[in-house]
Structure formats: structure tokens, C-alpha cells
Amino acid sequence: MDNSKVSLQVMADALSMKNPRDWGTYARILRKYVLDEGVLTMEEAVRKMTSLPARFLGLQDRGIVREGFWADLVVFDPDTVKNVATYGEPCLFPKGIPYVLVNGKLAIDEGKHTGALAGKVLRYST
Image (cartoon, rainbow, N blue to C red; front, side, top):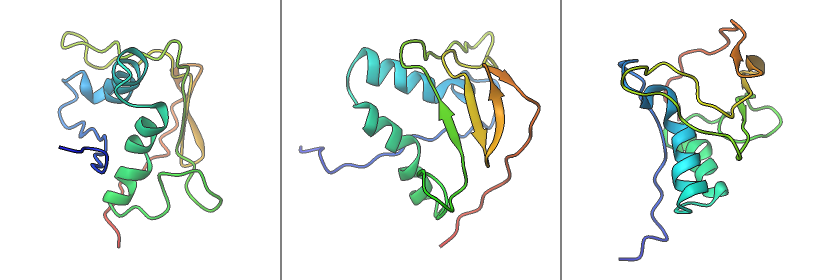
């Protein structure tokens, strides 16, 4: 089967907060499937984590860096990005992600939560 046209997005539901994937899904994808195994290119992985799920969920002003869109940005170091959450300690921030901006506000600064709660519930839009 030719899988070249298959488009799958990467999303995490984070319902339980007791599973390591709730905190480490994206770091794991980058480390394991991009950097270690080479199953995905960096560009493919980033698209599957950003614009593809935004489009799938009908979020018209998210998922890409563009003027007028919400600034949801993650800065990561490909040399150190790694999921460290475990079933014993599921709520650990991944390594190698020093900065996260949510709606243009700094939420993670030097790997530490700033206390900013800039996120909001997003609903499917057409």
C-alpha cells in the first residue's frame, strides 16, 4: 500500500493526567520518531502537531505562524528534547523545551511554568 498520501495528525487528549502521554506526547514523537528512528522528517512531525490538527478541528486561526493568527509557539532544542514522564511520575515537563507561548503570552520560561494561564477552551469552527 502506498502511504505517501496518508495524513494523520498527532494530538493528545490529556483527560486523565495520570498517563505520561498527557505531558510527553509531542516530545516523544520528536525524540523517537524524528530524531532517533527517522520515521518522520522534522517538518512532517511539526505539521502533524500543528496545522494538520488545527485544520481537522476547524481552528481557522491557529496551527501556523501567520500575521493575525494566535501565537501558540513552542521553542525546543532538538539535541535535548525528550519525554521524561513515567507512569510513576506522569506530570513531568519534557526536557529540551525552554519556551512556550500560549496566545502570545509566555507560559514556559527557561523550562519553568510562569503561572500564566493564557489558554482557553477551543471549539470546532467551520
